[in-house]
Image (tube, rainbow over all chains, first blue to last red; front, side, top):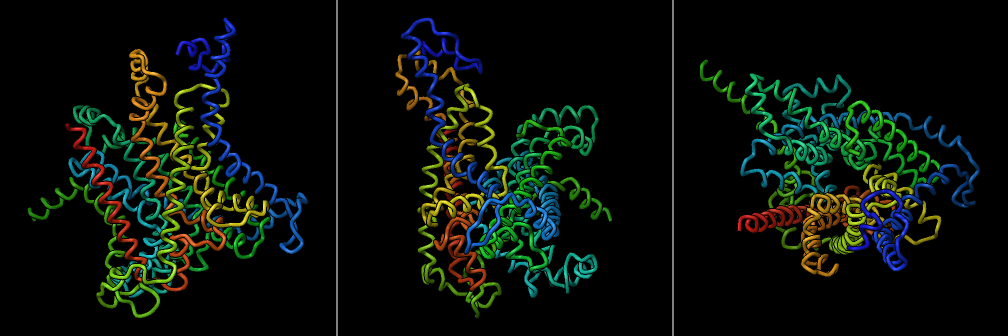
Length: 314
Length: 268
């Protein structure tokens, strides 16, 4: 402890020149501690996360075939070809993910609010019920939606008799009075699967709000809705932003919901990358597509963070 | 009429509660369906339509070829991935929470990026690297990938806990002539433990349930989520529902039990 003051481990400044030789040696050893702590983990991330991305970039500029091998030819056209061929899937991914995110916010906010302010002694149980789906296989739960939305199932017959399906058919959201293999089913699955990622950040920012602020608003004759609009919601903004990002990003890259609940008409960009990589074995196209996806998401996220004005989330 | 308007008023007052409970129902509904259909005896290969009640699958959960093999493989991978990510992640978290050093913000960015990137991008790029290095896909490539994406979550969980801890506690220990090692094992580690446990639990759940990254990096090795994925095409045995139900029960009971123990400790 005697040496840490001299080396200034609590500032970003380079250490002050040593005052004595012995001190200098101990101080240097002390200074290396964080690097030793970081070394294995960061090395892991550099080798298995960062380097693959660089490698992926070079793959996207290769041409060739599986038999003859691939070679970097700086063939940028792969990007244009991929974008030209698969832009419908890109647009669909963004549209589905954005819809699912909006639905998650609409559905998740009341539940997060309920747990944070109204649950009382039920709070822990509700929290468990929100988190528990994390621990059950989500593929199994997604398959369960096949049962729930099936043609002969209660949801379809109820919505059908209420003429809702006629309406959604007319809007192009469903087809032939069925729910499975429609955009509605895919969005329903996406919303369901990423809902906990919305609820948890919302809850943690709502929970931090001092309840006396609500009382103060009430004392100042604010109606409940006004209190929500002027006090609660603005204070929960960090949670809204974090939740939106945590939902939108994985939803845009997902291919499980589109595969299990949709048909070939609802393929998202994740499905294309998966089949290009694992079935067609066209690695350059798969690489280019994933870079376009990454860039698109980065752009959306940047604009969104700018607009929402909460930069401390990142 | 008076009754109706009174009812309307109550409804409006409890709108948040009603909406919240509806969302909760939406979250739980698939779990209910999975549980109910674990007692089904389907006619064909697919367990999507209710036929008749049966406990066959519960009495013989390993009755389908490869199912329990894939389950034990997933458990083993999740266990080792948790160990690896927790050790590496905790070390990074301590470095970030306790020390100021050059390239600190670069390290933070490197930790943040894997959480902010679509899984399919990470999955495809790691698989590209493995392919080009001529590594054969299997247990080790899956494990490497899982440690990679769990690491950031551990760092975030542990860092939050260590940051909120009072540094004076450690100074006090040192004032009482505790050696650095004693300070660490008797003071620092116990305080950081809940964060480490949360990170480990999250790692285990994420690794056990991961499909996308495993799909790209498993080769012909079949983990449990990959088994379910294949079953969605070939036929879904009822045993899948049994295992899904069991996992849900274990998770709920485990978390409730932990809260009970934690709550009692806090009170006493």
